[in-house]
Image: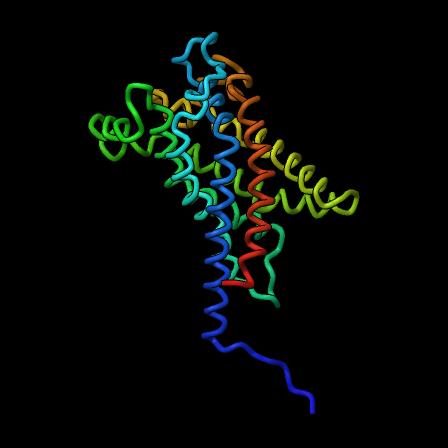
Length: 276
């Protein structure tokens, strides 16, 4: 006699959702740690080229102590940031959808954008501190300096630009990279498809998010203007090129990051899901 279809109890379903969320948090954190370890010098160079306080001839450097300055705080903050990004997407998706009601492509994009925007509550203040630290004043001393001069509101400088930038970035590695990899896999090997998909998605995300990153860095390095007023001033004084300061280094980092994080997140998530 053939058994009827099996139905999951509410407790089993809740446990499965918790397992998916747990694996997503872990995979997001691991992906972020790997990316920072490889790409932190790109972030340093990007920030130096965007910082008007540094003379043009001093912006580029091969000095490892400069290129990796602040990498540990960056990694320490990136792990919860990417875990929050991937975890938020997983939470929304698992509690709104199931195997019989999968999210549409547009919903996936929206969930990734929400996850990225929400994560700016961590990445914004951390990048502000990293941007303002000096060889004489480290991460925690800079944090105290900002609080002493501006209070808690000082840590919100550049938050809007960071949220918009991170929303686009999360869509890039969380949706676009796997999507493009799947399309390219019909034409080439899996490894080639992974690199091609990540590179295409990364360059696109870099182009779309660069202006917001430039604006948030300008706010974090001293500009008192609100986001839209600052954008108007930069366009008036420098044209569109002013919005793409440091673009070579940032786009290199974003293309690399989307490729690395998209692949690591996908592989670690697939590895952990059956075991949690």
